[in-house]
Image 1 (cartoon, helix red, strand yellow):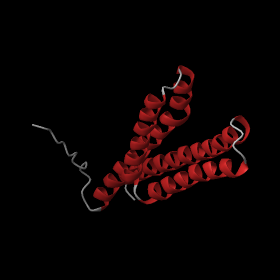
Image 2: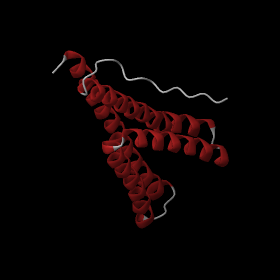
Image 3: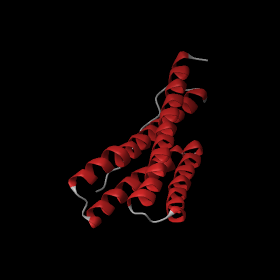
Image 4: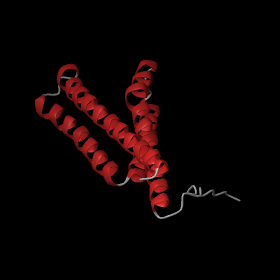
Amino acid sequence: MDAHIETHSNRMNMDRIFALAFVIAGGVFWTAASFAALYSYVRAGASVALLAAFYVFAATAATLVIGWFYERAAAALLVAASIAVVIWGAIASWELGVWILMGIFLVGPMLTAAVLFALAHREQEVVEHALAGSLAPVPVRVTTRG
């Protein structure tokens, strides 16, 4: 295998691994946090807390499955989810501490995973293009509004 292709292939695999790791770590953290918050802090009961934790787990599993096969779609969904969290915070009028926590532990990791998924997709395009016989870079599509 050509060194050029191998370099891009290794980079693609690392981007995928780190993106999936961010999704898994975030899913574990938020599944536990949603259960603990509802069960201990709000005292909503075990069934309500388990249901909330299941929703987080299901969203994480869906993101993993989509990201495994469709990196670009996963990146778009994670960006959309990040925007939804910011809108939720604006509507709920979060305090500064909540904004900081959600930014550090939810929005930041989701955007990081989105960028990593997008980079993995880009590296896959480069590898596929190189394997097709041309080692020229894949052209970047630029669109302008006018």
